[in-house]
Every structure is written in C-alpha cells, then in structure tokens.
Image (cartoon, rainbow, N blue to C red; front, side):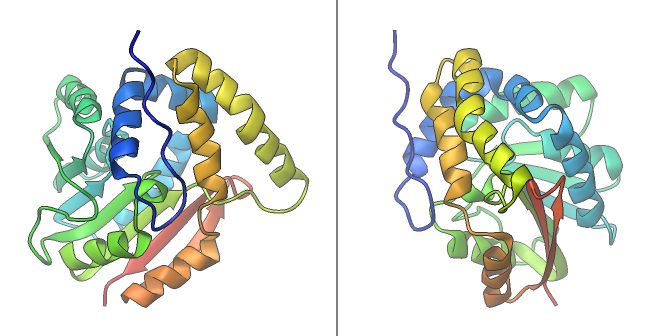
Length: 242
C-alpha cells in the first residue's frame, strides 16, 4: 500500500506547494463526495452567492483559480453561458475529474494546469477572477493576490470564497469542535487519508480572519468588501480593480 502524502504546513509564507499538490492528488477521487457530506450541501449556496458577485458586471472572460474538480467553474458557466470560463489548477488529477464533469454537462469550459502564484496568462486578460476554498492553500497570500491583480483587466473583479477561523461564541465553539474532532474522522474514513482532513481544520485556524484578508487585498490595490455566510462558517470577499 502506498503511504499517504506528507501533510502540508499551514499558514502564509510556507514552503508547502508540493505537499498540497500531492495531498489533493491523493484525495481527488473522493473529493466531491466529501465536500457534500462534510458541508451538508451548504457549500452549494455559498458558491451561488460567490458566482452572483463574480458575474455582476457581465464579464466576458472569467478565470477560476484553484478550480479543483471545477465545481465553481461549472457554476459560473451555467449562470453565464455567454462568458468564456477558464479553470486553472496545479493538480492534474483534480482537473481530469473536472473535465469529466464538464463533458457530462456539455459545457465549454477550458481547464488547464497552472500555478496560482505564477499564472500563465498575460496581464489584464480577464474581467473576473475567482477562487473558491483554495486561497488558504497558497504558499504566499500576498503573491497570490498580486497575480490576481495582474491578470485582471482595469475595472475587473476578484471574488474569494474561504473558510475563516471560527468566531468566538457558542456557534463558533461548536463549529470548531466539529472541525477539529468530527470532520477529520469522517474525512479520513471516506478518503483513506486522515492527514488531509486534519490539515483542513488546521489550515482554517491558521488562516487570517476576514478583516486581515481584506487588509491584504487593499494593500494589493483592490477596493474591497466582505461578508460572512452561514453564521461565519464561510466568508465572501469581493475586490474591484479600479
């Protein structure tokens, strides 16, 4: 039996790219099932909200970074069939599953391999850039934001959907318990990779709170706003390039 990949480090400014890549390659076949089970399907509503923001100004070209198995790229294309949607990810195994899903839906979405910290696209080539639940896996948050800014055209919009650290209070405490004790067990049983689902809560706890991510976006140049979803389980950040 092949050993599970090494669990990546968490947080910003970490040398974790190759470990993240290997981890997601390992869990790719069960990734979609786990998302549905572990979020009780609530993630679909979050993606709808994020897509509405990303498509608010009828972008002609949209880039979904860290697209994974293309769930969010499919949401975007379904809602905006006239837009050109490109999904980029550095895990080929995830992209292959995404291509199968795209073909089954008979949609025209280009899914290609690319590093979020060195996107293979010219400056100003997209009207909207999105990233759903992948940003916290970046090895360098500021560099990722600068790449989003670079490939966005003037007047473009970035939308980031992420799990912030649980807030203080009863609901936050309950969610933290679920995240740290229940989720890793379920995820490990279904995926066969317990490390991946201990990495998930650890990466969320190490991620900047929404106010700090908003500061990073403003420092990059974005005019930004954010709001919490489902009692703060998810956070939706919108940044406009003026």
